[in-house]
Image (cartoon, rainbow, N blue to C red; front, side, top):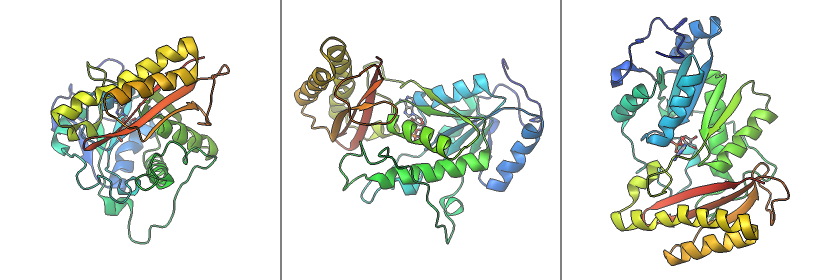
Length: 305
Ligand code: AMP
């Protein structure tokens, strides 16, 4: 396979993977470390793609990027209870492990690491990783549904994954822009010796950002949901000619026309997430979250200076 260096990975099936059995499914941390040890000894690069599964093209774009750049590609598959608030969709979050294994194999994953929740959070688990500096307490929307606890759950599990896998690079999607800012800061602040790669949001042909949660949308809400990406495109166009405030107003008008009341629609500095009224030469993130029927959807656009 092009760009693939199987050094140290000879225990794996290196044929072009197209079946679930072509990817190595590992559930135990010790087994994962043992499987990666030869590659690490040989100096092979390890890429990690963290996911909650129910894979779509967004996830696959991250896996393909990892495949192109790294010798060994690990995808984690874990629906992390710690990042769901009370009343959120943990129980009904869509799951299909067999299909995920097949798709992960097809996109070039060597290993899928899918630990059980009680192995990630054993009895007596008491440590949290929390990024401060205002990065996790903005853009959270309705605090009754989703507060800083969400990002504490994300950073704690991602720090554990980084420690378990020891990747050279981890791949994340721009769709979860705040998550990207928070994880970048965690890696920087904790001196974790690795690189974070961020890939663009993959969309359906009609603009809807791909998300595992799109499965919750009935046909009518699926149609209404296109207003989010339309609103962001309108924001981008208006911001370019008339400034950020006009961009936000244009987005709000698109959402209103679709009968969508956003949980938030905000302009923030793309790096530190401080609220901004104008770009002042820096990248601005316009981000939206909204409940559309049964799904809480998020999307964003980056406005370059
Ligand atoms: P999730 O399974 O939703 O936790 O997402 C796993 C990774 O895939 C995260 O880094 C997400 O940002 C990324 N991701 C989710 N949806 C998309 C998308 N539409 N385009 C690109 N990346 C995505």
